[in-house]
Length: 444
Ligand code: ASP
Ligand code: MG
Image (tube, protein in one colour):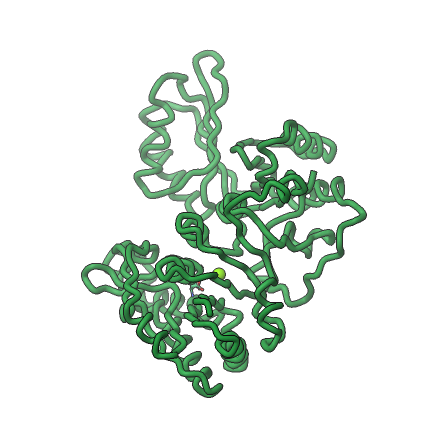
């Protein structure tokens, strides 16, 4: 008997019929002798609907008091889900009880709309499990030190589930979703896409930070910090699939590199792409100490995260500095730079470009292979794609290119590397367009 955490996403919980299927699946695991804690998301579309209501009432920029209310509103979506799932399980003949975050409690800080989990008290949950019940806990929400309801940021149910699994030292955290694992590529762009049976924690972290929407990045951080065995798998398979089979499905996030596996492993296990970024260039700034700080300091003070930063070699005492940031922050950042920074540093011009895309190759295998970057650049050169920015880490290379070449870049790379032994994609029409997997195929 093992303690297992299941997480079900919005699509998996999308209708009462689907919730009944979730109940059948959970009941099957219980009958196989396991203790189950289940963390569901709100029904698909529900969080958007709730936040749109809030926006109708309060279209202006949100104060911190208003943000508190946003969390109060958004947290209700998950509360409906847990209650419905508990009822569905009871109808299946399985004893179950549902809890909101504050009832557990899942304690967080007070950063409304993006709170961080600080502590989970598992006493109540353990008592219920010992009494033979399935415990169902709302994803996405918690409670702060003053008793205010908080939420963990969009996609936060993944993090709730992994955090609960960490706190309870669960044997495994199964993240059920509308795709059947982590793919090397978006199968709709690249037909050679295939599912990875394992991915290392570091690769998954890079993928999540690079724009793959499979898991919320904080959940991957939690999984890494507490070594929670985490598996991404489909909730759209037959709910009565034998447990032994289901336990091997999807993609498992691993923590140690098995030397045998590492030898066979592709140098690059995937490519992520991100169209949610924009680029700002500050032209002709004086090339002297303190300039990067003068430019990026006020941007950081406005809570705007920047990503790739490039400063050119100086010429005639001048240089250009470019950086990428979230597309939603472009207008605000341009305003800060033009109004507050430009008059000080006396640069010639500040320009913004929101038609860029970032394409990144990820793989722990890169560590031990030279020349990966060169191969990537050659491929882009052969397609006549201009690279605007480059950034690298030990296991990742990212390039910023014109958005219109993004799919071409990805396809080109995959064409070059596709081998005959590759299996055809298993992904079918069940791939939900809204949650497309953005991990792209690229093997070297
Ligand atoms: N319901 C929340 C959202 O839509 C949390 C989640 O689904 O993970 O962002
Ligand atoms: Mg999600």
